[in-house]
Length: 216
Ligand code: AP5
Ligand code: MG
Image 1 (cartoon, rainbow, N blue to C red):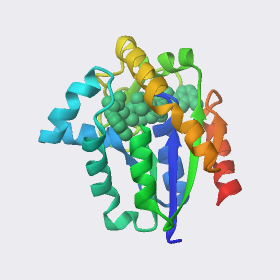
Image 2: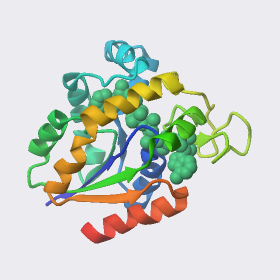
Image 3: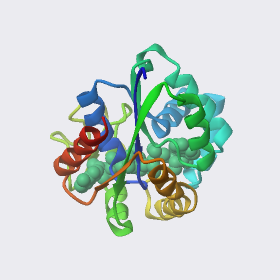
Image 4: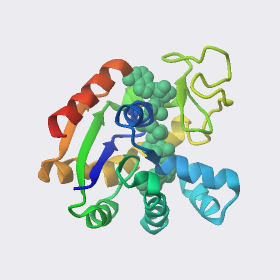
C-alpha cells in the first residue's frame, strides 16, 4: 500500500469542510473538495464551471462524468501520491465504484461519516460565511475576529449563492436520494466510522481522529 485516502461523508452543512481543513493538517495530506474545485472553475470562468453552475445553484448534483474527470485530474497530481482527504466525493454509487477501481490495493481507505440532523443543517448553512480558499466561519457559531475577513487566510468572506433555505432543502433531498446509500455501501466494505456531528467542532475533530486511530 502506498498511502491512505480519507473520505468525509455527510449531508450539506454536516461539517465536512470544517473538519477536512483540520484533518488535512493533522495528516499532512491535501484536502480535495469537489465543491471547492467547481467554485474555483466558476471563478476562473471555465466551461466546466459554467456547466456545473446550473446544477449547483438548483441544489442538484453535477453529473458523474463531469465530476469524475475533474477529481481524477486533481488527485493525479504529485502532492496526492501519498494519499489525500476527499471532501464531498464520492456522492453517488457510480462515483464510489469508479473511485474503488482507481484506488485498487494501492491505498488504504477510511470513510468518516459526520452525522447531523436536518434542522441543525439549515441553521448552519444559512449562517455560513465562506472564503475563496475553502475555509468556513459561521455568523453565530464561529464568527471571524474581524468582520468579513477569514481568520485562517485573511481572504474576504462571502455567503455562497446556494446557501439559502430553499436550495439547502433541495441539496438535502439529493443527499438522501443519492449519497446516503453510500453509508451502507462503505459499512459493507468494513471501512465506515460514524461520528456525532452535532457536537462542538473540537469534539467532532477528536472523534474523527479516533476513527483514524481505529483504522490506520
Ligand atoms: P459542496 O461545496 O461540497 O457542498 P455540500 O456538500 O452541500 O457541503 P457544504 O460545503 O455545504 O457543507 P460542509 O459539510 O462542508 O459543512 P461546513 O464545514 O462548511 O458542494 C456544492 C455543490 O457542488 C453540490 O450541491 C453539487 O451541486 C456540487 N458537487 C460537489 N461535489 C459533487 C459530487 N461529488 N458530485 C456531484 N456534484 C457535486 O459547515 C457548515 C457551517 O456550519 C459552517 O458555517 C461552519 O462554521 C458550521 N459548523 C461546522 N461544524 C460545526 C459544529 N460542529 N458546530 C457548529 N457549527 C459548525
Ligand atoms: Mg464544504
